[in-house]
Length: 142
Image (cartoon, rainbow, N blue to C red; front, side, top):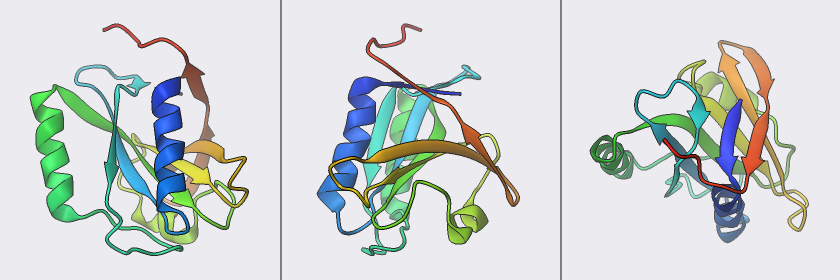
């Protein structure tokens, strides 16, 4: 289960809308030492593919974010990206690029721009498992 404060949920959608018609991408961070997937910060990233059908994070930007997360005692709990014309389900490319079954893969479908669809998955090899997202109004105290 992925726990996501409403303001961060909305930030992910807003990033997708700003990037539209290109795909947006980013990293979801949670506290170090917490095995739950509780998101405490969203790190919007640049899509160096600059494409409506794919994304790749800038390696230098990703390194900088990883350093910021270490300083803040955070760890990566998820990766998000938008689909501009398809449903919120991992493509074969998304599945092939998945780095760990312990990471939440959040997809934002913007094919209906005014009604985005946000879903999360765990990907283990070629097995894609839907993961519930709990959007809540209060920050989680840790």
